[in-house]
Image: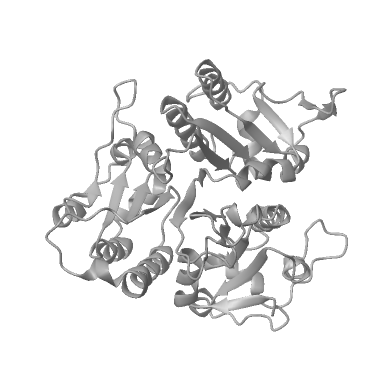
Length: 414
């Protein structure tokens, strides 16, 4: 059986783990009940959770460890921990490991430098979903370096990709554009800009592609000056040489391909198709992996929610089937009537959603348990956002959208 995997690095709440747990139950009980039958034969792993960064605290927190125990009681589930990050944080997972010795892994493969590499293990999974093994992987970076560990993780991921002879793309969005700023000179940690240049150089020496594309809108907002070099090439005076500042549409272009693309909190889900006929002609759009975006943040405190919607619209415009799910604190986008002050720079996100929800290739959903948990009633005028429960959420995760023949979908948390 093909496998699904999650890469999680941010804080894992009891709420998030609970809806993931319910989705896995749906998968095993409704879609693959044969996995619940007793078998003496070793089972292939169906769900793998790769945990690094702050997500590892969930393996010790009493509120979340009980949910992990339920998840691990299901067949064919495995957790792979970043052993270096466990040691850095002083986290003990012995209780969980004693109960599930074959399912909780706290040792990582050795990289070329002889040191344990969690990212080498991630890369093995990222590259085994296709036959033959795909020649490319990608990483969507949305956070700035140094303030956020995810920039260092992106560098390690790209390095592991090139070392495994895969072409590696970096897509820089929102504050992620800062990873390519020229002249970075941290005194107490690895230089991300220099590291990216080194990855690009290694890729070139191996004859591999290594694109680093930054969203032009996000870059311009943050002061990255550009001009036309005379041949239609946008040049930046503020970025390292491998970095290319392009329109969001151009940055989305590589997402039409079939390679695995991860981010700091993301997943790759193998899709179940029903009623599909290989004798029917397939459009180019049908082969593009669909995208599910979980908006988990409140609407106006950061650029995350607006950035997620803009990203979703760009994907849909390129013919990628895109589902946007408002979940956790993202459901605050549906509460009451939003009235930005006249002349303010804030977009009214309720109006934005209603304006684009009827567009081709994009759908919006509200996770009802998150609304109930917060005592929120959805604004009746937001009828373009469809209410869903756990069963419908699971169907969105594991079933291909109508007309899609791609074998996996990409999941990103904003």
